[in-house]
Length: 126
Length: 389
Image (tube, rainbow over all chains, first blue to last red; front, side, top):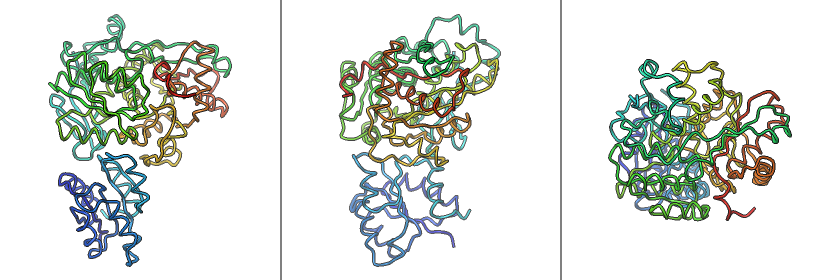
């Protein structure tokens, strides 16, 4: 079974770029367009890794990360989370790490870097 | 005339039309690099023709991206002096130590080169308003070139940017927005404004032409050294445009067959120990940098938590068999004093950092006494008078 990656992102263009990139490396891609949906999808789908945009229309990425880290389900509680942001506010990186994200990448995301960062957690299957 | 014939993604190699406005590769989100018809240049031009032209960056016009010379925005950039540093060299036991003194560019820094190129190309492409995030000197340079080009300018700067950078930008008519944060946050905010209001973003490597102006430093070094490149180049690294640009210049000169000796310099990237993402990635042999948390240094141009072109910087360092090294603010200030006392050069902190790095490289015996070593002074210390030392 390919690894499953949940991408939480409200921008459709970004979603398409990342979907194409991850599927090219054999990952199973699922997508949530806001924080609330991301939390329910995370519980239901049990992803192996979450790519988490910080600036979301409802619950922000920090809160999503904090709630995942408090999950009663062990697999979800320890799922790797990579925060992605356009870095438009001071301290985005620091706050993302403090909220429980494992790593921080600024947008625009270099796709080769994305592959490399994801593969550090999940060896690609392509 | 320019022999620009393609823009190529630095990662996937995809081609982009240089007659259209371009940013970075839309597929892999990596910088685009300009390519030239090297064969046509070789047939129509030789290095003596370039040598005989009036001084300045644009005498390399065939290898620059501006197609029509009427679009070249010129303020006197380029052909900065290569100065021997005999007194400092003697202290370190180096017989051939030089500085490329970029403080003598318009607006007092090497940023003039990249912005001359990018603003000129923006004018040629019909762009009417440009936006930039900056640690300081790039903003001042962009404001000046945009003013001369009749292009509207908007600049995002950290609130603690040196006063000279803020004032030189404002007096040139740029809209200056001071932010609570570093250049990385300025980049995010500038990106949002660009998308919402239609500004063209000239952030480092998010458009293809700043690096073209910067690469001319490499051409000038080759020419001044008689078409044999120096053994070592020690360069302060924030966004890394100059380092990547010089490496690109050496590639182009080699393809042209203009180098008498194709041996390449060992490239040394210098950062502050308060913000050293390239050094950390180099030491861990990583292809990309981690974002540097809590970046802080008096050398504000080095306060770049992560460059968009980090992988290109690291690739150049590895290919050149060079290295990356961090120095402290205390060492930078002492080096700045030494350059002024012994050589009469009031260097920017970023430039002084290269001498602080040289001190370590000599102590580590990484440099040999006969090697030709160039340290880059990227700007004038006069712009940093309000930074406490």
